[in-house]
Image (cartoon, rainbow, N blue to C red; front, side, top):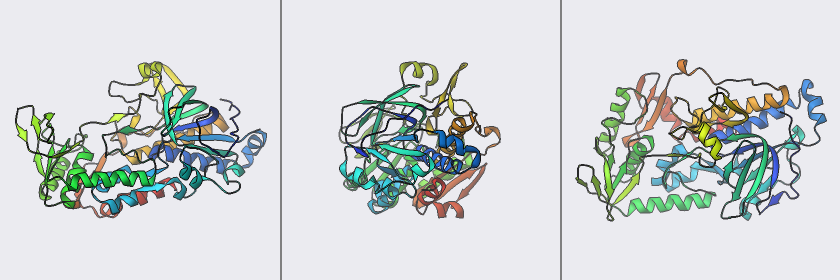
Length: 433
């Protein structure tokens, strides 16, 4: 696909929504989106210095334009949120402003937040231009997306504008209820949210977590560990948890860890109603005393921004998105080769994780670079039939329960080390940021 000429924004910093054209649009700047950006930067930087591509870069009348649309002006390590909710000091370590990430320079910024814009403004020319590309950050959200254009609006603004693109990478992920998915538009905004969540827990004596998925398990364990004097309930509708396709040994290990940590477990229990005082009524008309509740029963994949035609053809009943082995929109013989989907949204039989999200971001960047320069796809998704499944969870007393390829461990030395900072060091090293 030949690249269109991107719009040259008149100002380095813009505070209003403005229509423009970009070559590569990335929707979402968490694990997957940041991996895609960093890998695109790395590929284009490397390719631009190779003799076989020199004439191509020399012939370009404008730089390749890469645009990120993301409401948070920083990297939030979602892995650490359950712990951050109960420990404000720890929470400070789990959000890194874009201005503090290594090797991430924005040539253009569109934001209503003056402090964000100022922190990201580069004095002089960035190194990006030397390698034939430029990077734009839009602090806002995409409200509509089809195969040719996106509509966006800035944070705290109702005005909308259009971005036309050649390629799009949808990495909008999934959301859960607050505070497990904070807004976190800036570091200060994020810390206000974490402090508020901590204060709510602090002033209630009985805390209940409804839903025994990964997030619910870790919140229950973290609350009890941080507030040992409180009653902490974990309520799950089935006999075993978590629901991922892992061994019974793993489920039993996390169950026993929570019990050792003092969490009260209710299995085979469904909640039908939450009273105004926090008490919970079950479907068997029993009452579980409570005063503050975390609802961790579901998540929502962020697919509502897609056009009706794309939703009808590519979104499943579980709000996953159908893609091919190159992560391009694909279903029933129809395909959009310029539209890539990565991270939690893909309709693949995998346990969704930060590791897979970053892998997909790197894979997609590799393929888009190859499409632009060599007109071919280069890297398919790995064969899942030979990939071992696994999960790592923090249980009671900060115990680390893990399973990889059928082997279940308690406090495996490797994972204990990684979870000292809840993997943020490993993630930043993997991203190269």
